[in-house]
Length: 300
Ligand SMILES: C[S@@+](CC[C@H](N)C(=O)[O-])C[C@H]1O[C@@H](n2cnc3c(N)ncnc32)[C@H](O)[C@@H]1O
Image 1 (cartoon, rainbow, N blue to C red):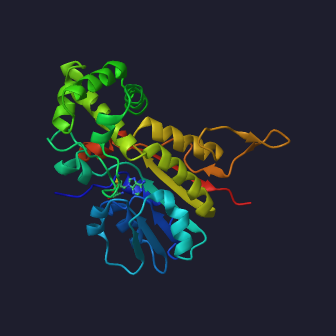
Image 2: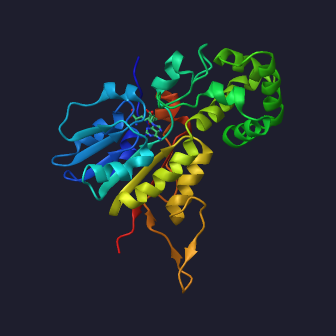
């Protein structure tokens, strides 16, 4: 089975405006689809591909212009310093999980298979979805389902999970799926279960926290004129990226100078997010929720 089919490939690579001798970061290497395309444009340049999942290692291209970094992308600044690189010409991040994660039953990301409730992208991390479901306070579960899954009846769901786990621990995707099914209409069951699984996945991998750290590190590492290209897959992360590119901070607060002019380190390359064409979505259904945002560091 294919590891991952890259989303918005042409659009994201064009947005990076690659210089043949430039230095680039692919923050989410995965199946290496975007990286392979970046490498085609490089001569003396170099690409650093980050992925926190060791499985991605199997896709490392055979190229002297490439270095794989098996770490969380929130550490890009730290690692660039380690490699003696002060600034880079472009950063690409294609957020979230890969098809490989969804299609590998034992990783526990999908309710299509019965498997342990895991959902860790970094397989060395401690926190699993089972730990969250079996140990978090009801109020914290409710918050996760509401905020990260946008689940309307998060209250009922959390209450029931706590009741069920008192009878026996909820260890498998199947158990969680059967609990979830009771709280939704069969017509929208797949969407509802996806929301439950998405919410837990975001918590397991601290996706909002690391995205915040990554955006700030990216701003520090990019050179003036450098491109920041991000593909998001849900509204929470898209809002954070949109705010950050508009203002230079995640809350979206616009700082003004003495004369009232808005101060931001970025200039938007795309005024609005770019979304995949109907043709791309038809070929690759995973692309359906993708949004591409691009900004550059203002040259002073
Ligand atoms: C959507 S896939 C990227 C696919 C890739 N663009 C391709 O063409 O194959 C996201 C990848 O980023 C990795 N990832 C997600 N969050 C990460 C993080 N905080 N640090 C490092 N890697 C991360 C995941 O393990 C996954 O392999």
